[in-house]
Length: 414
Image (cartoon, rainbow, N blue to C red; front, side):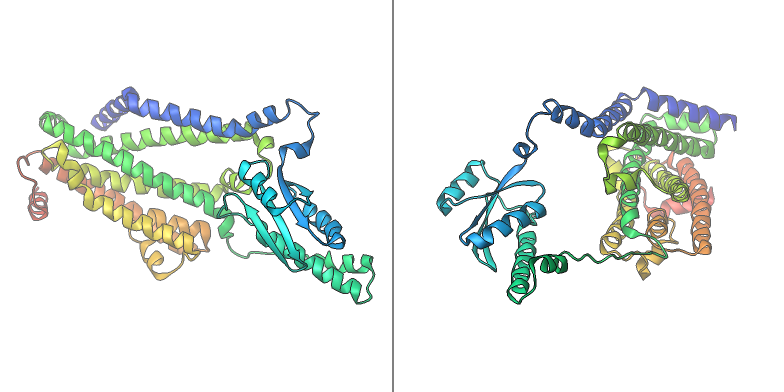
């Protein structure tokens, strides 16, 4: 146990002295601080001159309607429907309207060709531009209202019929996938980044020791099991410290500027993760990291040259990417309970992502969760012990890259 503690402290000191590690952490914390304070900074600039007319800061939308009877109603309804625009009526020619749009003086324009048709002019049509759809609904309501008035209904009664609102409530008996989507995505992406980053760091550390022959001396003074677990747990602790610094500062800065973010559903859902889901996230995150870090460490111990690391660990990386892609496609499709996801929920190499995603976005029985975690814990410990044996055998493997069969035979004999 003393050997394990010594190795753990030594590896943690190396991470603390690593300028790249410390620099990246500080950079990300500063970046998140800037993002969290951005609404507050924008509000400061917006409030510099409170006497400015609010409409002057809005983009201008021109409406051209040849029918005077239609123009007044169109102006009112369009102004109410397009609250983000300064809606103005115009009698200018179309070429003049186009010139204003291309020059940037006007954002867009609607030219009404009749009661049920229009032409929408805009300089650069965004893929998220919903203005034509909103205009279609507005003109449809105007046409229906005029038809009601023409049929003998009073303007007040027609307006009451057209403005009727349907009150609907949604009661989910399971999980709200949309609400949980964002922090599930962040957890999966964070696990992806941490495993690739720190897995490579563990592999580089082991391979460097072997290439410098330092590994041979270390193995004679410490047990391989202590060395492997010390290195991997140190990397895990360093990763947790970095993530706590990054996400902890994000939570702190968000609470400081919460009033400036308003009712932002995405941001609110990210920082209001349910406690039980947060516990599951930690469990699967830690176990998922450990199992892959052990694999990276074991495989890198069989490599003689640093430049051979990427080739050697490719199978492990592809295995992780397979689970990552299955989870991402399942989340985007809205179905996280199909057969492949269920299978991946019990495979130790994919369950950290697959089972957590199912827990967050679906209803999973407690015994399935317990079984998945049990398999993952047993597999992590077993792979850790096996990695220590491969580590001890890998010390003596120099020259060409050893074959899997030779490694298995050497481990079996050991």
